[in-house]
Image (cartoon, rainbow, N blue to C red):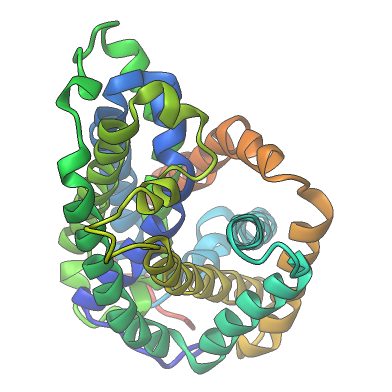
Length: 370
């Protein structure tokens, strides 16, 4: 086996939820407010959730046909050796590329908001090193560490929303659907790309103890992320209004800065940063793990650990060389990335599932290494 770790259905829900929500908080409120206006929270909650549920259904249906193998491991079996290996290599790059984006968002946020004198490369090495260490230990360790991170994250989220709730103006959330459904649906296109990250279940399914719980767990992830992201988006728009929210670089960070209770509770953004750093390290670890497993299965390695360092280096190099300012990163995430993500999250898995059904692959024909 490539990884001997095992996770429960609850751990799956928590770790995939954290992998989705960690970066959603950074730019989604601004993006949806700019496109959908006061209906930004609905864009996060409705069309993006519908897309996430579709991705979850397709990916779980495919994973169930090959319960002992990760996605990149059975692609040659379904598509033929050469096409399968080529697609597995494409997914390996995709996972590493997503990792570089996560790393870029993380380092740019920390550098811009707090540590302006610290080189971005140093921040990238620290975040990548922490995540890579968790990957080296195995997926079970990542899931167990995330249990604590998730509790801290949710408690911090509840505290943040509770303390700022009195500043929310319902008028900022009106009128509802003033311009019809189209702007609201368009506003959901960018957050949908993050919501589709539930597709990593294709790479985590073999490690799940209760495989019959995979679909309910995936649905729970999509719904939970929708509620959290919808709540924080509605709160941000409710406090600042859609026009201002759309112009803020880090709207949730600004929301935390807004909190001041009787001159006693101040600098609450520190709480946000602490919870966010823990979450982003978990997210990095999940995608490092999937990229390393994908690389190992593509190359036919007996262990994923030799792939950890090359994947980390690749992600850091992409992050440092190909991304410039934070504005350029946001333009990529809101322009090209959603369609790029849709292809790997939904379109390709759906086509592989169709091929598996038509060619009678999977089902009782499973086995192999994970």
